[in-house]
Amino acid sequence: VVAGRNYFAKVKAGDNDHIHVRIYHDLSNTKTLTSVQTEKSHEDEIEYF
Image 1: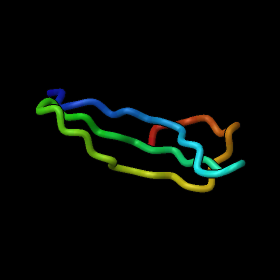
Image 2 (image 1 turned 180 degrees about the vertical axis):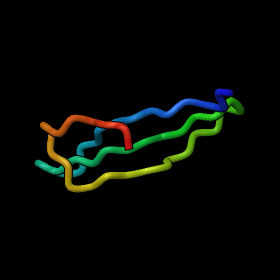
Image 3 (image 1 turned 45 degrees about the vertical axis):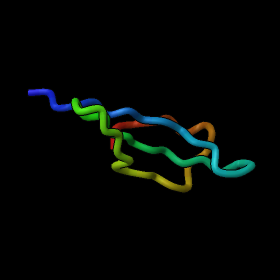
């Protein structure tokens, strides 16, 4: 049963700094920041986390 969707994004956090974030969007239209990975670069690919 699907209860929502996970979205992944790369966010620029400084000149050369990036973070990866996971946002959960449930069926009641609530969005929640569920996970953050720090110390990423622009070249780092987003993988499931």
